[in-house]
Image (cartoon, rainbow, N blue to C red; front, top):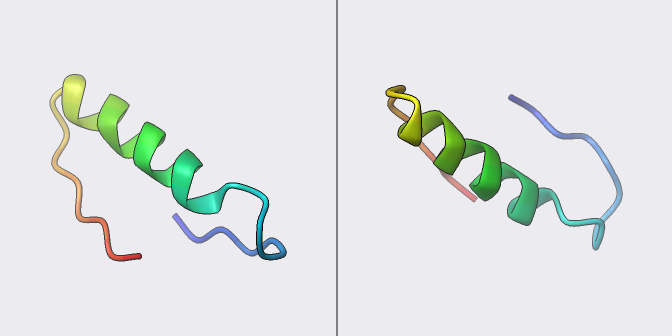
Length: 33
């Protein structure tokens, strides 16, 4: 997933939340801020 939005809108927060849900449902996740 690639998020192209301005700074300060919560990209990292959203990416972490989506990644966590993916892990809970059985997917593997690689997060690099």
